[in-house]
Length: 565
Ligand SMILES: Cc1ncc(C[n+]2csc(CCOP(=O)(O)OP(=O)(O)O)c2C)c(N)n1
Ligand SMILES: [Mg+2]
Image (cartoon, rainbow, N blue to C red; front, side):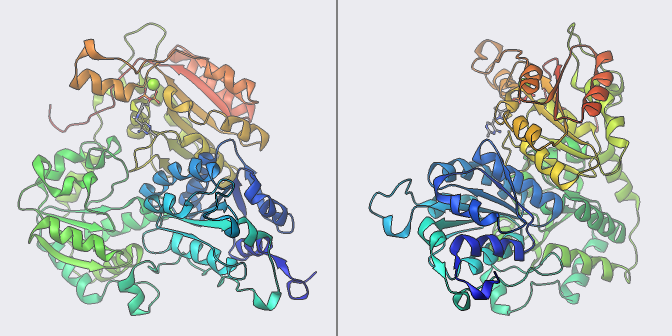
């Protein structure tokens, strides 16, 4: 029956609004408060991908947003389901990932009366969301969903939470009273709706004026050793391509800061040794924060100057405060539009000498020669470098391969030694555990090219059951598990800070995760020698199942790459 002939439930309005906004699938886990939404989805083309923990649904929506650029949608039940989901929003927030968490919620008439699973959900999600709100009327549910999707992908992208009280989902609304969402924009939107300053301008996002672009280019030209730092939101294929064009146009190294290790990210080679020589830093959408060490300490020249271009006025103001007179230009602008303007205006400028850029690229590409030959000193164990030397050619076979790296010491080796074209890492949040969910979402977004995951044995325990989701949904990927029977990253801190005799609370058993994965319907391999790894990868790929290669590794600290010494 057509929409205009029959009153619709609030749940139908939500489901149809998502469809109108171009959403294809929802990552979810069932619960009393959202069964009306499961029912409503039957009347749409929406694919419900249901998972084994609410945090996994959020991680999948996060990965979907990062990979496709379109907001990923997670849907969980109220109370405990919402509480489980909230923790994972922290990762999406750090990664600047466009995604929406829809949470079921106690009925409005129950609120304040001790309703079933009643809790202040919007308050709970607020610190880890870009916006967090609760629907208040059935008729406007569609507009609320539209607003959530719009905010998630505007300005600095990020997670948005919307709670949906169960009575509003059940309520019927006459078709002429329904407020549908505005249709999704044709391009990735660049508007910055959460910023009051920009709302005031009444424009679809803010570009960089020619005058500010030219002043920025002039400052770059006058600097001897400038560096451009870019945000996680550019770490996808289109963002990296844009940044490469900006680097070429300005002949200035342009680097994404997407790891909690910041400028010392092992992906960036010996970059941290180059940074103290910089005399001008241009932050284009990158927050001045711990990852950039606030441009202070030994990592930076005390006279280094800053240009801050950011979609959020508050971050430009923060940069001005932190820099105490050394902020030479501060400007509110959309990141991609600003980069495009700089590229266009740079064409008219005299190109700077390419020597500094060449030095910077050499530092970024720097990897110790010893890594080509290093082998484990322990029998029946592999050194992480041995693992990634074997894995690398498999990644390079197909340019569309997706690489997912979790946190921990083993995964840092992977981040450092494997190519980055289409890669997701845990990100600035520094949280571990999302990678198996990322892999499931990546496989749904990329049905053909291989998906590889690199993670540690501590981390795999967070969402091991997602192998069941993968097997049930027929989502093959290959997880390379570095098993050192240790939470090694934390163990390394104990060794460094408190001494060998005070190391405790971080050991695990060399558990057979490969057998667990096989029991969940996947493919498992145990590898104890380097020669066994390539055949195991071949068999894992051939199995066309979600696979876990449990590689017994020597416990090794994360790599540190220096230009000297
Ligand atoms: C959600 C979350 N919990 C805890 C930590 C702290 N943490 C970071 S790395 C790590 C150890 C990871 O161990 P494993 O996965 O085995 O990797 P390894 O370091 O041993 O290679 C821990 C506990 C974190 N970053 N995020
Ligand atoms: Mg470990």
